[in-house]
Length: 233
Ligand SMILES: Cc1cc2nc3c(=O)[nH]c(=O)nc-3n(C[C@H](O)[C@H](O)[C@H](O)COP(=O)(O)OP(=O)(O)OC[C@H]3O[C@@H](n4cnc5c(N)ncnc54)[C@H](O)[C@@H]3O)c2cc1C
Image (cartoon, rainbow, N blue to C red; front, side):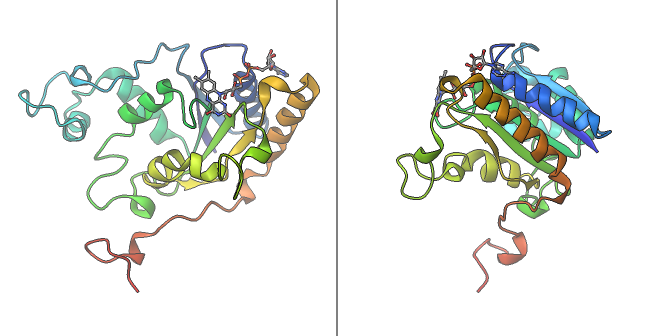
């Protein structure tokens, strides 16, 4: 298997970085090939803009997704985007590794998603969910957070974690076709003991070792909808 880990944390010695290193060691230990995109270390540019295209179909008015589609075909898309897209298409497994910022991903990672999951390759027209451009590949989200486990779930103060991560799990990963595995979550990370953090690292390694047997989360399939995308009864 080939795995791409996209890591977004501003501190190289963070616990989130320890999870990244654990994933690299575990997956490589199983004989898998692993590539890492360390977005802060790469000084990744997270801003989707006109500068992403060396030539444009419409220089007067930027329709970003349209220019993405043509930019990939005409090789006029920015080299940093193309480099990440090549890694994405190479990998059978994508792991997004990040701390929760404001119920979401750091802007750095959001900007990677905006720029790299290009229209025409990853999705486009009726190519989404099970028909998405990355169908047949698997993805997983690995997150650290400040909150405690009991703060998440039905009836809990913050609601279910899957609701919080919906824009990423469903609106991004499932949308472009990935089989999305359940997130790996390290709760309350800054406030627990070093031993408790170590337990998360051990649990993560065990989880990764059994990944091949995991069933993905359930998302819509286009066959459940008509031409206009109304649900079939
Ligand atoms: C802008 C912003 C918004 C946020 N929004 C939210 C939110 O919406 N919800 C929420 O719950 N939280 C939120 N947080 C909190 C944030 O998610 C957590 O602080 C973060 O996930 C903790 O992980 P970390 O990797 O940054 O931990 P770190 O602070 O890097 O590490 C915690 C401790 O682990 C130690 N450590 C490092 N490596 C190891 C190792 N190998 N073994 C054991 N210990 C180690 C470090 O030295 C440190 O003492 C937010 C934080 C910010 C900055």
